[in-house]
Amino acid sequence: GGLGEAAASLAVTAYAFGNVVLPVPLGMAADRLGPRRVLAACALASAGALLLVPVALASVPLFLLAVFLFGGASIGLYVVGLAALMARLGPADTAPANAAFVSAYGLGALVGPLLAGGAMDLWDPHGLVAVFLLPIAAYGLVLARRRD
Image (cartoon, rainbow, N blue to C red; front, side):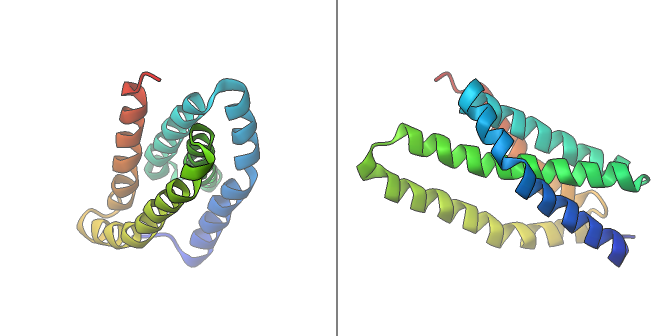
């Protein structure tokens, strides 16, 4: 079983809305609290929203809220991460670092759907959540271990 067309359309809309609405407040929070704290919060919120999705499927508003939060928190990892990277580098290093960062993002955008589709075939309905949750949890662990 999966989502019907209407529910899937609402989920995509909620995800995109999170992508559009949350980057500005997350950037402002990074300016006030520091990027590492905001990145950790984004990783935690992304993971929490993902874990909520299977439970929330019984309630459309709760499901859409979880998808909205995942969309916003996950794009926060990109936006705040890129801003933090650029803030740490000198002018000569920003172009190659930006290219590497965007390339890594693009690789994830290419490989992620393939892995997610395979995972959904193998472990329906939890495969999709697992594919997203594993790299976010790994990133959260890296953030927790850093001491800078």
